[in-house]
Amino acid sequence: VGTMAAMGPLPAMGALPPLPTLGVPGVPELKPLTRYEAMRLGPGWSHSCHAMLYAPNPGMLFGRIPLRYAVLMQMRFDGLLGFPGGFVDRRYWSLEDGLNRVLGLGLGCVRLTEADYLCSHLTEGPHRVVAHFYARQLTLEELHTIEISAVHSRDHGMEVMGMVRVPLYTQKDRMGGLPNFLANSFVGTAKFQLLFALKILNMVPEEKLAEAVAATQRPKKAAIDQAGGAA
Amino acid sequence: VGTMAAMGPLPAMGALPPLPTLGVPGVPELKPLTRYEAMRLGPGWSHSCHAMLYAPNPGMLFGRIPLRYAVLMQMRFDGLLGFPGGFVDRRYWSLEDGLNRVLGLGLGCVRLTEADYLCSHLTEGPHRVVAHFYARQLTLEELHTIEISAVHSRDHGMEVMGMVRVPLYTQKDRMGGLPNFLANSFVGTAKFQLLFALKILNMVPEEKLAEAVAATQRPKKAAIDQAGGAA
Image (cartoon, rainbow over all chains, first blue to last red; front, top):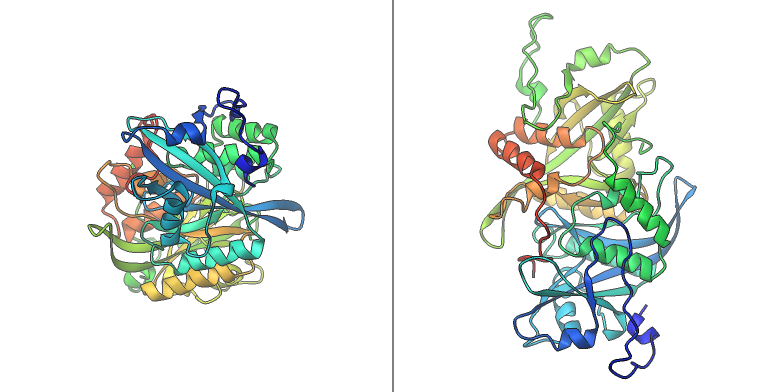
């Protein structure tokens, strides 16, 4: 992880490399800004920090579909899917201290650092919010421990209605898995950040992301029989 | 629970009371059939059984929004929300034995009986499937135990990507909570069954259900800032 770290020492101001864009048709591009730019925003801006926790997953679904990675998101109190995190009050906290503080309320046992920083984007909408995003690779056992601690946390059933893993594969019907998942309802920048991280961290090839998003934009099939293949 | 039981002894054939309909505008009505009719369907029909596990919940979200009930659904391997359950092979199992068998794979510690039976409906689509639906009221502690056992089960991260609770309230913005949740992607009859059970069991007033469904059919707002009120 650690895109910032992976880039090596920062070049001199004015020579910053262009920030990568999402480039997935059908998903509105958000304006990227550097951490340096974000830190210079005035007090009229709010800062949100969210984290994608993920782990390589050697499992095979139905013995034949590689799961590849387990990626954590959560169903929120408002019925939307999002990443763990929240707003950070920059008057009192560094981005990472603030992120760990809000993660601590729900997850407990993981501490993120600046090395886990991935990107910052300006959000759309009436409020001046800059969304910072982090990603941390864990082992599958560590990730499972977080899922277990989440269901025991005092937030469970309140702000967080449950943790879910994101399916990264696409089944033969071309909807099952990531396409259907992307057709759910996401809060604010969460869907953009998910796609961005999957692309930047090479977890799903860019053309597969584009196909999955495109599949969600086709008119829906009349009805799919419940439990297809499930039991 | 136990709508069947609550109706008392079955009336003579031909004098069956009309089965209730969902009656929520914008949600296609499925054809109800009695358990008696369903049991007489030929071998060309498949039978699926799913269960809504729920518990009265005295909690208040943000200290002011009554949670009312905790209702369990799951994020499935195919990226869709559904109830625990699956297909039952009627050659070998009664509906309830089959249901407990498929529940046992994921949930372990709850056994449903005929007293928990709620309704049967014909599904849409090319396959001849009749969907049987059950509902069991638990204590909040029992429900929490099931959530904990689910995250420890061997299905976790495979067929089931996580359990979530359904928000039954609607926040002030008229989208947060149940409306947003209903805008997610559901497998087959699951959304119909959720609304049907919430209505029949008087867990959400019918007009609130209709409002929540109607809210999901309005054109979407441009973008909602991430984490509104969350942290």
